[in-house]
Image (cartoon, rainbow, N blue to C red; front, side, top):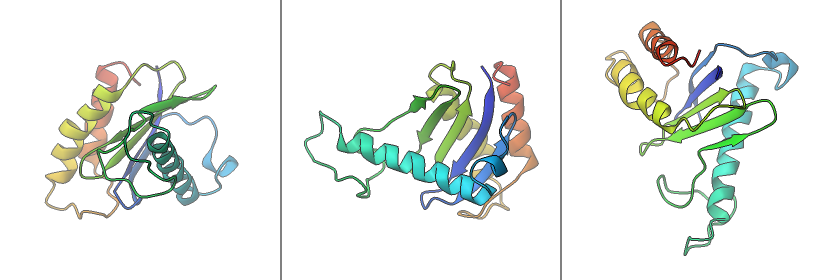
Length: 156
């Protein structure tokens, strides 16, 4: 399995971090700009999350499409697969969202994404005294720890 890229968004949809390892198609050939790419990615999983909640057959409430959802409530999605990639989604109770794009044959990565959040993000971003919540970051320590872990488990 190959990890193509990672996005980290806050609860407001601000892309706090983006890193790519292998992206065969440049952004300019798709979304146009990095900012547009990040907005499209956030819009995609926001729409999928609200759609999954609205279609949930077990929910007693009828969530309306596009209506704001409380974090942790209703049905959520964890991934979807297209013909050439698989998108994995992880949301924390604080509203932080992590998105990983991998090749289409990747297994369920919820445990990996939880590890990225709990052991790498919290350690190298949340505990960093220079970190400003809600502001994009690019800490070498975070990127190094992420790369090291992904190589260790054979994901790069």
